[in-house]
Length: 108
Ligand SMILES: [Mg+2]
Picture 1 (cartoon, rainbow, N blue to C red):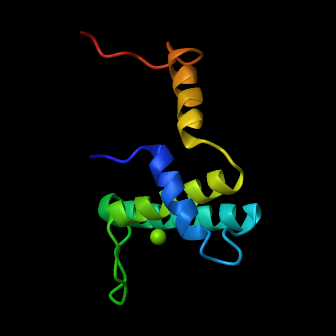
Picture 2 (picture 1 turned 45 degrees about the vertical axis):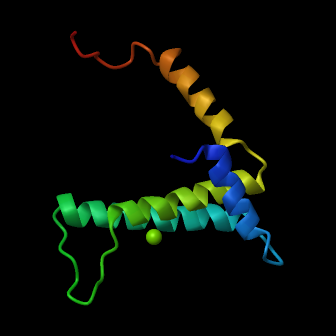
């Protein structure tokens, strides 16, 4: 069964709290998030874009890189005491509210 966002945040929080300093500073976490986003971009660029993998390079899967990126998002949310489930609800309310007619809808 799939884990909820709350479960994922709690699992990472438990893991992080085994360390003296559970989370990096927010600025370092954002920098780490940018690094991981770059790794996602690199995989997508090699799969779909014009770049070729270096001979010496071992490319991780897009799944693994998305997991790395998600981890950094969860760490920042945890450190800032933000519920990603609430953040998701806020986003959904924008999608169905403010942005409801922003994009052409599929014909039914
Ligand atoms: Mg990565």
